[in-house]
Length: 106
Image 1 (cartoon, rainbow, N blue to C red):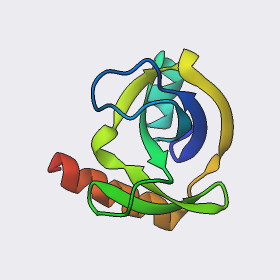
Image 2 (image 1 turned 60 degrees about the horizontal axis):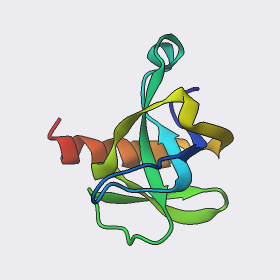
Image 3 (image 1 turned 180 degrees about the horizontal axis):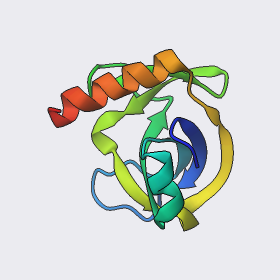
Image 4 (image 1 turned 180 degrees about the vertical axis):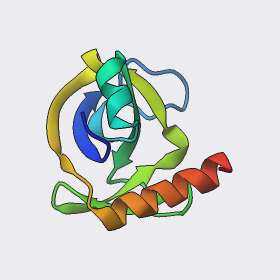
């Protein structure tokens, strides 16, 4: 699990307004940490949300336009990972990182 990889992840069960169901997510954790830990930090992707930076950042993934939902960043157990779906390009990763910095005030 390398930073920038996109995996299908089962995010259920959830509570309240958490983004839910099986969906692609971008691995944002540092690769060495991903190898050492049982959890991985990810950002979910959505095709239904509209781009509204910094909270929802437009990216291209799985041959379609979607948004990375930056305010739904989370750590998920590796047991939730279903299959690798691809990876984000450099420009999309930079846009996502900018969105996360603004969302988290880093």
